[in-house]
Image 1: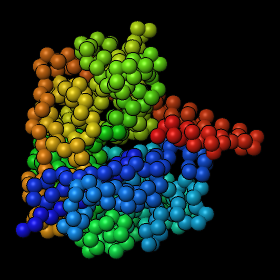
Image 2: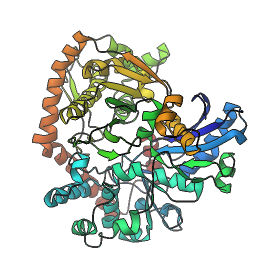
Image 3: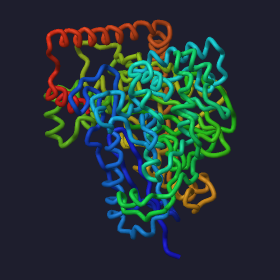
Image 4: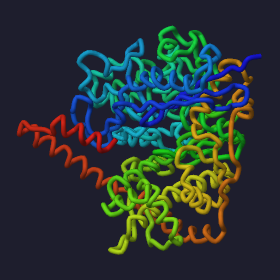
Length: 576
């Protein structure tokens, strides 16, 4: 019998990656990446129109381009006959929302709407809906909504309802034009199949779908008059379960990808959740940390518990028959990247170039030579807000202990450690709620940083296993494609055959763990002070920033001047 193959496509924050995988054993035979031409719109729209703080948008056409560019290139790199491909599956960042017409056309592609910010895709890290999230949380607590504890007691500004309420209140015309409020994970499947199927994963974790229902019209109407029909008009749609077949590849999508028309297309999924089967981490106690620009923590369990500050627990949210839990950190690799862009002196940059290293490699090498605590610093990893367990994107980062003797490698190491401390808070919160974590399984590009991995093992006192693939989400999607194509009975069986993991690559060192306990105690004090007791301090600074932005816009409007399109484009490129 000839071999068959599947294609997994992973849509990340800045690019989409396709990988060709052999169905029989999960061997990865070829891959290709397509960078999004527009990257992330945080400073301005393509037209040059400036964006307010905390916005993060994308251009949906960039997602289609991944199908046209990366998929054929991956098949060519694999050297296989495209006719032997039996299925394709995709995963996406979440919660990433696309406002569309009835046929799936994104609003920004309609005539006259390209200069309207709310017409674009709202990326997962769009945090401008924090005021709406605050109101959702307050009303849910006041009414005793049964679904709120399933999300750790707090709904995030990143999620479907907060962003939807923001659209309703900030641009009612575009809200009324929106006929479907679609997760990008489902929109791309819609592009492949011509059929809109809403996936159970994002519906449960990001769309407040619990026990077969969304928040009631009465609750939504109490949030804002006229918003009560949001679910019925914009959200509610048939759900597909993970691993199911959403439909068949259309002739148009076959022409884009070079794959056979009619092959299986799996129900959409989230990049983090789809990675668990790729890492063979589908047993209770195994927490998968997908570490990239941010980190998402997912795990399965046979018990249902209410974990404070978690992103959610969903029956069948990762694999059928188990409860799937999610938590996360909104900034990890983004924080390290921010520091190398903004905090690296010229002499350090020159030293990195002379040694043939990039900035991360140089700072990691210098930081690795230090004793634990030698820098005298503790940082808070909230540069992009806090996803778990405080669930507040108006919080911000901090570095405590700076002196005139502090060096760049000191701050860099403190930032590495801060993200590990943030993960420990999540692990301990799960443990205290009755969902113990016995192993961390690391996926994502940051697994290559051995110093960072050892810090995580020492800080959490857990063994760290590492996924045996550099393309975990894409491999996970390929596993789901194989199930959708009928090659395996379920995702667990496909995971055993096609997943890859290297066990206990990093183990905690007791002396180092004890040293980190001392620093973690300081981190926890700062965490609780700025995140709970005096949360108003950081929120107040965010308010100052917004008011300054409004004053500048008003001043420029009165003077008839504004930041030029050229300047906006330069700034956007600098922040990409």
